[in-house]
Amino acid sequence: MNTHSFPLLSTKLHRPPVTGEIVCRKRLHEVMDRALDLPLTLVSAPAGFGKSTLVSHWAETLEVPCAWLSLDPGDSDLEVFVSYLLAAIETVVADACPETRTLITAPNPVPNPGGCQPFAGQPRAKNPYGRPIRNSASSRS
Image 1 (cartoon, one colour):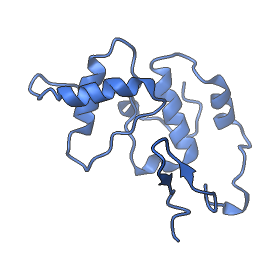
Image 2 (image 1 turned 135 degrees about the vertical axis):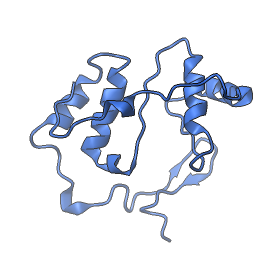
Image 3 (image 1 turned 90 degrees about the vertical axis):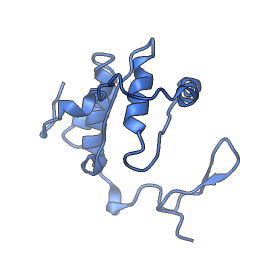
Image 4 (image 1 turned 180 degrees about the vertical axis):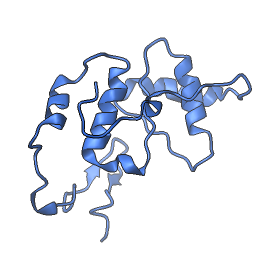
């Protein structure tokens, strides 16, 4: 359900098709299977290294529904990003996240006071592997 002042491109919500001519990356599929227990998995590599093909092929093997969202730099606006994220989730679970939908469509969303950058001046977070994580806004030391 698109209740925004901008159109959502439905093509961003569909996995790329998997052709029969791909090489199955069994070891990477096993890594992705183990990641199912995590709240978020990020697949990162340079352009053209097969991220979309890998994840699309892996998602095809799942016995559970899988939402898909393709992002580009124009989706970095909070309202745009959350709108697309909700639309992707709603391809799997209709009317999911109603509270978030209400917040993102509110006429007076929470303002960003003084144009603050997110995470600026925040202490470094720790990841489960014990190394500190620095965000780009606070890593200029």
